[in-house]
Image 1 (cartoon, one colour):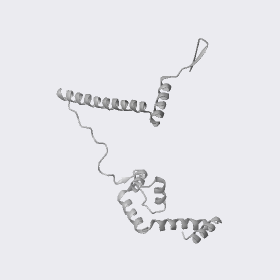
Image 2 (cartoon, helix red, strand yellow):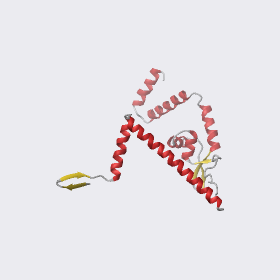
Image 3 (cartoon, helix red, strand yellow):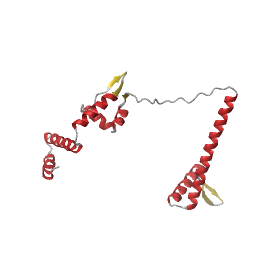
Image 4 (cartoon, one colour):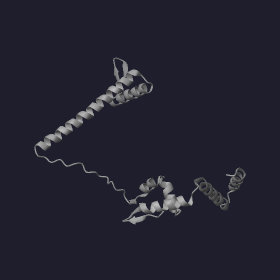
Length: 179
């Protein structure tokens, strides 16, 4: 926003723009190790901690005052169960096995992992079945490098069947290097 006064043009900024500019300048000074900026940040951190502590004290006093007049305060109810769910969605099942959802779905499609159970229109994987499938995969692939090479060779073979000439070159290179 511009303002013209007495023949001069002044650039005016909103408070948000000015605050953002100052925050960026402060962050740059902190990154550069400016002692003054570090002292300012430490003071801000202390003030924030003091404010949090003050809020906690006020909340505790309010609860104490409410209890004194007979108001019952119910404890906060934990929304997450400490019991692990047995039925997992695709995201949860993939995270449970430590892989991405895309790879998880690929393994399900290849029948290396169990298919989901339909729970009222929601596909869910049984955690126990996932454990069993993982144990089976672990037994089948004792050497992960060997399994990886076999998987690459299977892809090369599929490319040969599809008639791609570069698959022969890759295959010859693998035979030459022994990998």
